[in-house]
Image 1 (cartoon, helix red, strand yellow):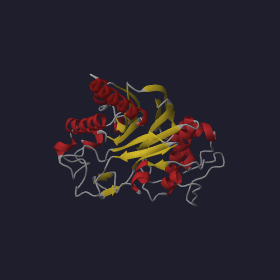
Image 2 (cartoon, one colour):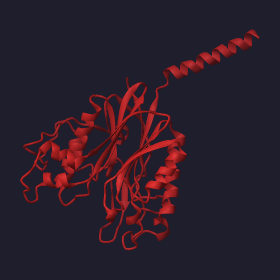
Image 3 (tube, helix red, strand yellow):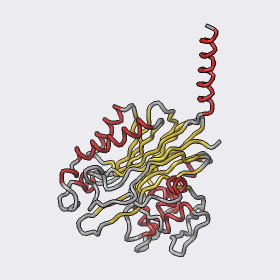
Image 4 (cartoon, helix red, strand yellow):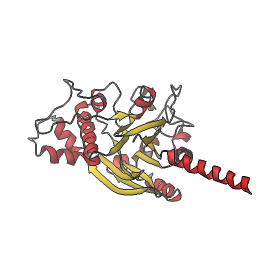
Length: 330
């Protein structure tokens, strides 16, 4: 009996010691789902097999990817872009089954099935706040009325409908803000994308108010782009970077989870070949963060691909899913 009691005491002591030193972490996923209205147009993804473009097939794969991350990691938060009216009920039913709550904003139009973004939070996590920011309206409120100058990138930026969705959760008794965004695809005017990325970054700093935050999404920026560098490089300035007399862009910067963990961004996060466009394979998706956070690990992504185009048999979107585990350093 004495030996048995001692064994129990040692076991329980070890157990509580492990609990004491174990850091609570949070897993962040981000995924551009590809709206069905784009995927299923037969004249669009002409280099993909039609059966792999069907929503039912793609959604089954998406769910499996989500469930694997949720099973393998605690406190998994899901951020999605190109959530659409057709995919919304699928996502809602999935969240209900997995005991999650989805917060979404569909800001597009009929041409893209009211495409938008969303964040799904496990109901086991303490959620304290949810914020929606129409970035174009935010820019207008900051800059005030303009003179409607032709080809003014600030005026164009105000007209975009893209929404930043943010949620505040409590981890280790500390507030943590999670945001997700889908950058306007406005390659014909890079200044618009630079403006939006800077405003979104500044809004995250403003909302977090000195607390830690993570910002995910499809930014439609490559690592070599001026706007990307302005997000992560201190005091970065470039002659091509769009300035405004009415708004001083903050030079507060973020870190990129994959860059910090691996020493570089992924080789690619999107691979597609659509009708009228050349084959494209590069990095556009990121998990940025700021504050006293440590990147414990990131989801391993492929180094290269031989695919003619995504989606294919095993990739349900033309983007890859990214994921990172964070813990607090203090």
